[in-house]
Length: 405
Image 1 (cartoon, rainbow, N blue to C red):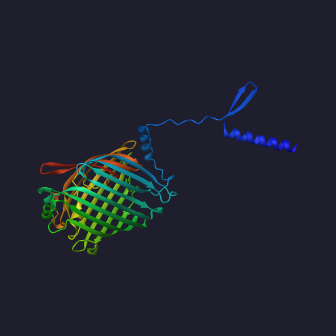
Image 2: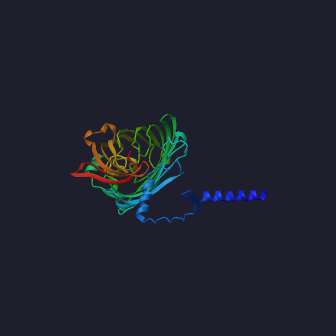
Image 3: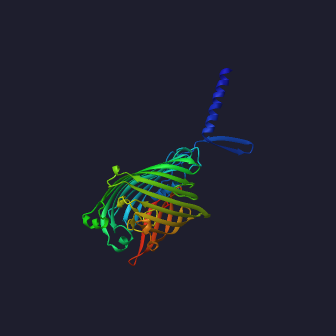
């Protein structure tokens, strides 16, 4: 009797196991009920072609996965073009991650890798990122870049940029920049920065450059140490939707760690503001001021026309010790991951504050297309315009990662 009960229990357990392991169905015919079970055959997934795989890849790339993944990275390669560098091929990778995935109120850390080669001989590779530590108390900013860039040089100052004929040379740059910030109180940070720059001009016609730079060297080796004070209430640094950013930087470049004749210094200030206007639209404003001492290598002077400010100008045509720029940009999301931007602004490069001339202020305006490559990380296509120099309209095109400011 005991063995019979044990056998029945085992059979019942096996039936329950099979019933839960398989799909079940019940057929009712009048008063009779027939129960049966079957195991469905595995479905072979449909093969996807290349275009469908690519579409699905980029569809998922804009989803924030940092709550479940330690590191969320996406890669894109595409042709690039600018009036300065010409046609080329660029590869960009963007990654998002969180030091503390239990606090989703803190924005994720970001890292970007980039590499580019163009038909004009431009070679550029580097990495940059922002590492945000627990509770946003500490931040680490870094940038490492190596660039070989055929360049035109008109000389130093406004008059040289307008009147001189450009001299062609190849600029080889190695740059390392590391900054560390600590939060003193809400949105207020104090930090330090170390810069290492090695820039040299490689040109078979160096005698043509010499009159444009005077007694200055064609090679610059510089190490700088900075103290920074920042107020930052931006919700996401690479692409803010709201907030205020104020920054003051004081840098000293010791003679002992440079190839200059004396110590040199740099002072820079930034004021930026971001505000939502309506659904998908915001306004962004930026003011930048930079001042360098007379002992600064000319390769490290303020250069108008970077990827951040005065877009459309040939970078370095207007070069001098001091610079002031201002810009206002309207950004609008149009459809899904597509957006547009329009901006206007002005800037001035000058040797000293006593020699500042309003008539040398240059205009800047342009239009851009935005594509959200990853969550809140945009690839931007900007076409910028400037004033007329010798009857020719200044303009330029850029394809870059992240917003200009």
